[in-house]
Length: 364
Image 1 (tube, one colour):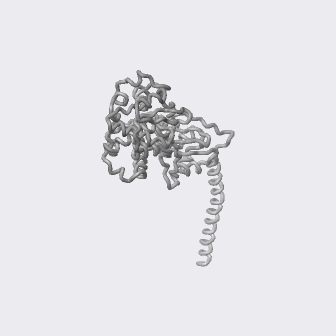
Image 2 (cartoon, rainbow, N blue to C red):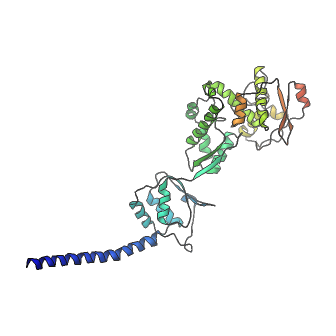
Image 3 (cartoon, rainbow, N blue to C red):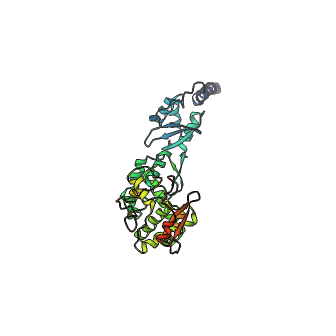
């Protein structure tokens, strides 16, 4: 009797597990099918990517760039992806995000279509943001630098200029000026999209001081005033020279003039007034009316150094300012427009004979 009862129990258990296994065998394919259907990339004939400025998604030659905003939830991202046509079902997206251990991270990411929902999820939780290449040429001003930054998509020109004129950042680097003009090193940088302007400024300023240290570690022991004077000279030399070997000679000319309290008479400082302060087009030739502009940056009529740097000097100009050539030259003038070669002279008479006043091309 007991054996018969035990046998019935075993039979019941076996039947139960048989039903469970049968259900599993039915349910698993259904679940797999659901996953395959909803996870599959949107088919090409149904894929209609519709973008608007509010979606923060941009088409490029190498896929789509999607910007995940700070504080944005995975659900809002899913709605955005569904609305624009990247995924077919936001509820399946929500399920992926809930089951996944990683959180979607703020930043800009590249999505290449076709892509499944899981593939898109993995991209957005990877933290591997798309970096924007930003090349800052030597000799550009803060305003021109801001435009380059803005066009790269890293941050707006307004935010960049605000950070470059932030008294706290300027004070952090012990700069005795009202802006970071001249203290942001021209180089190629890689920044994420919508990167904070303050971090961009600090990255570029740190790069300058790193390069100054490579020129001569003793440079960093200068007083802020002494260093600033060198940076100002370097910024002027950067805008004046075109032949590298002439840069130290030009720096020597400016220092020789400062020693005898002679006006620097740099065309570049007048061009700075015209383009950066008066917001006028770059002149092809300086007129006498230009060099008579009454402004502190006009080194034709104001002796000594201008109030601050006029451009972002590169290594050549910086090295020239810190290690100027030891000569008796007091003048130089462009001699050959094609090669950029200058004629250097010791007297005003020699300088007058060298030719007419010519300014640098607008691309400098």
